[in-house]
Length: 410
Ligand SMILES: NC(=O)c1ccc[n+]([C@@H]2O[C@H](COP(=O)([O-])OP(=O)(O)OC[C@H]3O[C@@H](n4cnc5c(N)ncnc54)[C@H](O)[C@@H]3O)[C@@H](O)[C@H]2O)c1
Ligand SMILES: [Zn+2]
Ligand SMILES: [Zn+2]
Picture 1: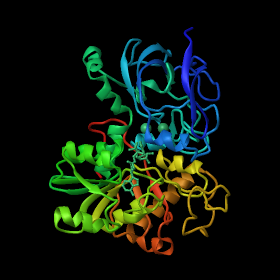
Picture 2: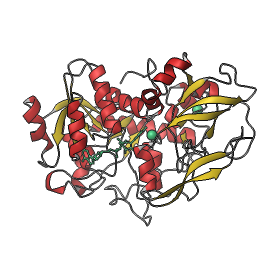
Picture 3: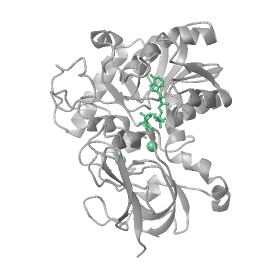
Picture 4: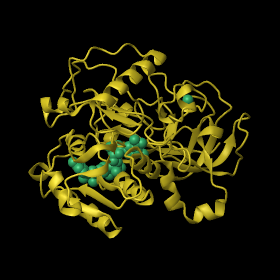
């Protein structure tokens, strides 16, 4: 059996490549499974979502093997794997999904009901996401392989472009999902908050979807220069705290058809506040600049309560806050609706129904039509607490499973 090494989280700001166990065909509880494969990792990426953990903004336990953006070659397969073979080169969607539960059948694979005992939705190498070992490693196990994996039909051709194709494991489809959720279409005017990898993938996707103008906002000058160099309109958020004026300077009106939050809860303020963390800045400003009946896509990762770990549930696919208690260790200011009664315990079907009702209510209240994957409560709630996280953000599947053809209409 080969040796294995992986990137291990050791505490805020500390990671190390360490010797780790060679993967077994077994689920996180140790039960043997035959629907999985073991991959020799060919490429693996560091995600903005990993950084929330590495910066110590979550309750990631020490010893967690990181990595959810994986491309690899199958070196071993369980006897129930029918459509893949040893030697196949495959891309791995970050979210672990069974392919057979209600939400998977509805293509909401980011909130699979069978891969995480704690809540809906699983991922590799992530706090609170089911305990699946991460793939910033030499070898990694992928369960439900026939469903989860996408095989590259021509291995040699794929290897020639592997540094581009590695982006299929998360960043590109995440950005694409953000643009589709925002309803971007032919002739749309689009504002994307964040010029990081997700923001640029959303911008590129908006372009593919036919947008007339794609503006990308950030306060990082190098990132803005790069966005400009690849054809997007940079919006320098250090210049003003009035996003609508910066947008009007480009398109002549202070609003856009579609907007995407590619920042999340570690957002900073605009203008003079650009060095200060202000978690609700992006959501509030997107609601202000998105036209009536426009839509907002939210791949950015958010918390729904003050325990940082729940941020990850939210950003990586969990859709409902369970409760708003008075937990210590707040990473964010308290939500405006801190008096919200506790959600019932995690009875899954019940929670599904609760979500549907809440979604309908949110849809009625909001002047902004949100993408199918995300809804934000009425903007009036934000007035209670400008600058803090003022509403719940419910994210559906944080991205679809395949890049082409399987996205539901926004
Ligand atoms: N849902 C998913 O599937 C998924 C997948 C990948 C990443 N994410 C999340 O998407 C977000 C972006 O990821 P990334 O890898 O591009 O992160 P990143 O940290 O590289 O980029 C974020 C950028 O936002 C900028 N920023 C900060 N405040 C801002 C503001 N108010 N307006 C505009 N820009 C602002 C920062 O300067 C930075 O350049 C993160 O929250 C990440 O966790 C979600
Ligand atoms: Zn990622
Ligand atoms: Zn499932």
